[in-house]
Length: 165
Image 1 (tube, rainbow, N blue to C red):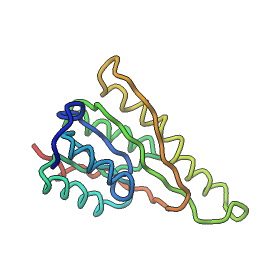
Image 2: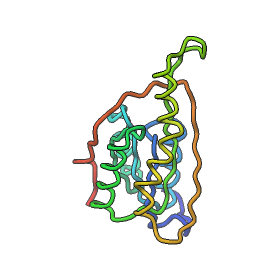
Image 3: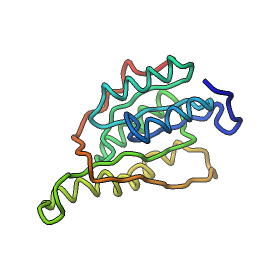
């Protein structure tokens, strides 16, 4: 791991959609700067576990939680796992993206609903369930990266066995 910046050392960061791409890179960078990272994905549990393991192998701290952020019940369950196992969150970064590869004129309403559920509406459910885990008065900024290139399927909460003591 690189020299740590004081701003991230000891912080707990949840990176939603971090089993690959930009989310993975952000998770690795935060861990490299001393943050304890929670890797999250909806349908790529193997990839998510690989990311968490590679962070730990590089000397960082990382766990993995599989939860579909487009489903409020899974966001609530993820928040409960974080509360029980870690007790707080300092940083939440939304990199989850999903949708359909269909052309707009060929897309069905359920395709649009899925895209908005992952890319937009999930920001509301994440804020609702995760903000109680964040320090009172902490600055909170909402950022999101979205795309309609990847299709994401629902998954269950699978946090067991992926947490470090």
